[in-house]
Amino acid sequence: MNTQKNFEAYLRENNLSENTIRAYLWVYNYYSSHYSDLSPANLLSFKEYLIIRYKPQTVNQRIQAINKYLEFTGHGHFKIHTVKIHQKNFLENVISMADYKYFKQRLRKDGLMEWYFVIWYLAATGARISELIQIKTDNVIDGFIDMYTKGGKLRRIYIPKRLQKETLLWLENNNRLKQSDFLFINHLGEPITTRGISNRLKVFAKKYGINPKVVYPHSFRHMFAKNFLNKYNDIALLADLMGHESIETTRIYLRRTSTEQQDLVNKVVTW
Image (cartoon, rainbow, N blue to C red; front, side):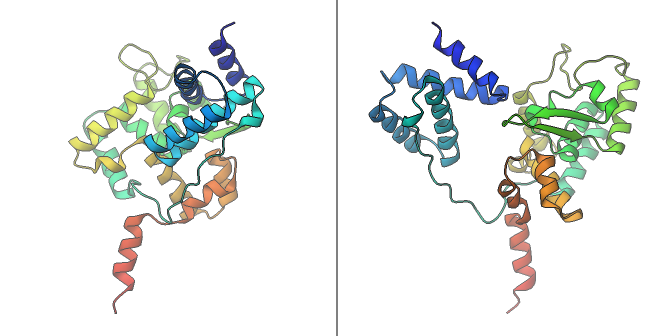
């Protein structure tokens, strides 16, 4: 009996993303190679190890993974409690609209059209990087792509009309419009990887003099959410567009970035 393969099949039955499955299998492999069984003492020791080594958010992600494994093996009564995360009252490292526009402008000027569209799609659709790499040319023609959330719910990611129009023109100019393949591909014609996108964005940031701390895939998703609420204050709709399970997750976007808070304090506090 191959426990790892059975656990992987169980995760897929629960409609978890590929990234989540990989993360959960890593936790399974680590635990099974360091602990002899699923005893409360070993599970507590594992939790203590995580708390010492990792940040609270990572600790909770790995606790969720081991809890999923406990559920799979029928040991759900041994589930570990997650650690409390003290949420900041501001957003950090979100790319500004000025830097975003400048970034797009430089990429277009340098003829790096695929990367120009990568950051445009991230910023204009609110897609996660794992979702971005799944977009196909057919989806661009349709103007949307349907994805399943972690909870198995259907989420539709819309492609704004202007972005759709420019993408179709770009595809046509590159003889790719009639090919039903992935939108973003590498030089071998294979789908670009999430790591490849993250690494290249950092390279471009340094090249164009943009703070690398604000240039990462999720930063553009944050920017999408903040700008959407600024222009159309409907947090319930935004939660649906972002694919959040709970509207409480979306409330973070009602807050300002630390830079915005500092600017407001500088402007308002004159006494």
